[in-house]
Length: 165
Image 1: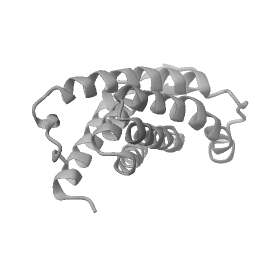
Image 2: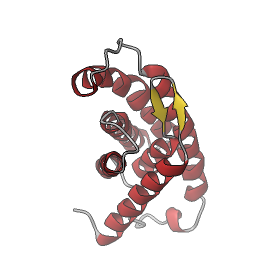
Image 3: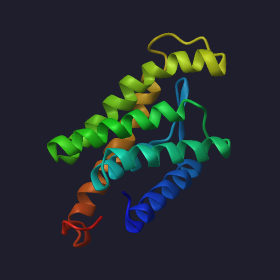
């Protein structure tokens, strides 16, 4: 069950992700790169675990779509990376592996999952690897940013306590 403190942190991370998407993005091939989304995925995976990380990724993607800042590809592009980042951190307890999970989940797996979604819902006839360069650029830049933030936050007193969430 989610505690009120955990839900507040989840809401805050989702809000930062949406706000970051409005200001920090760049064109990257077949898609737009939103590195803040991937940074939030890494942070959420490390701080909260895979389940909350996926929920946060879903919320960011949903609000981005409602605001016209994203497409349906934001869902697999963020949620698969958040899931793998959360599981990687949960299993090995290494922030760098959470970043690798984000990159593998978004940059590789989600880019391949996005091809049939783009064909079906967006009418885009895309080849198997059409989204991979854009998804990799976005996820690598965001994962590195998230990793740097997570390592910095882990050094603070608040995150050294075992009961922080």
